[in-house]
Image (cartoon, rainbow, N blue to C red; front, side, top):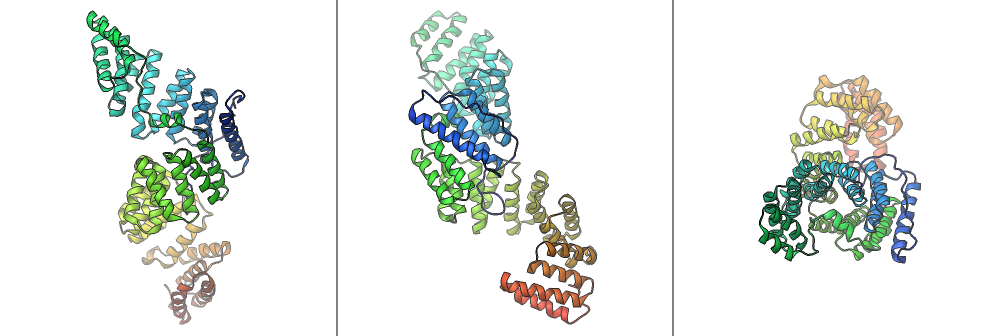
Length: 508
């Protein structure tokens, strides 16, 4: 849910995708071939549609790539993840999955580069497994020091410590440091006793130490069960079932077309196939919100966070819903969690700033608005929020200067021009006022969009210049338009009109 209102949170950045090598589907089971064929068709449909948000397309490439990876179409999977990463370059998932596809295809240099990029972007829970993959690749490349460095990082995470020890044991064997190898492999087996395959390198370590009895003991226990690190992202790919990905893609296409009820049905189908799918649940919550069913949307997003407490999109969407519904404190907690997971998310910072400002925490709000503006200098809503907060703080000259800076960047912004016109016409600090410039800005905004609010600002500018008759004329226009646009403001507008009708002085 992004933008001025509620919106499916999928958009980040844009780039041109490259061609995908669609694999030959003949010879596959009919259900699998049908699934892949339908996903290829849906991707082609999105690519053909004008105005498709880049990250929606990235998600579709990623969906298709994950199913290709499931069925070992590694080259096609890598093409999909490469395109997804171009379209959505801040999303660690695409680089991570790209690394997995290259690793599965034996392209170790490409795999290492992709995992390294993913690790610069990834949330902490993914770092352990990512370092295990990178450590294994460095070991296969013979880069033992690099392998040890990343595997020690993986060893700092309890879920991946055993896998890290097993690979560190192999690094030590390659260095002929048999004592260290035995210690690492014993630690791995102590954590996962059923990993019988580790008894072979452990036997080699004891043989290197001259302990034949222990070497023979472990060789006798050797088996075929290996040890792999828990990997939430790749484990999810491995568990994909026929139907889920297709339903998710259909849901996205329907949501993009504004068919929210159809989209909701598709996401429900995906959940029927795989109830633990956080992605389908987050998207279901998003389209329910867009369809106006805020209560059920909130339920779905809360359930998504129960399943995956660190899901950034779910935190943002739920924070957006709660802020819009008046639950400011809970909204703030979710928005702060979203920012913790994605610090460069300008929109999340802008929304958090609004929550803080509405709660009277002006200094904290200003800091968030300023960071949002740094991250997205062309975000006129963030620029306006920053200026409004400065006004509330009584820092009028600074607000004027920041609006001037914003208008220099976005001279066609009616939103910013109107704010500056009002400030220049009616600022409580009269030294900040500039009636001539206020009038010029206000008339330009009125000509672009004739509304009660814009007519009122023209009247304010004329009043600041002491041209009370013209102020009264424009105020009558504002009152006339307000009868249809905002009847609740008529009393306020008519009081100002009475002041203008009295003649000079009529400065606001």
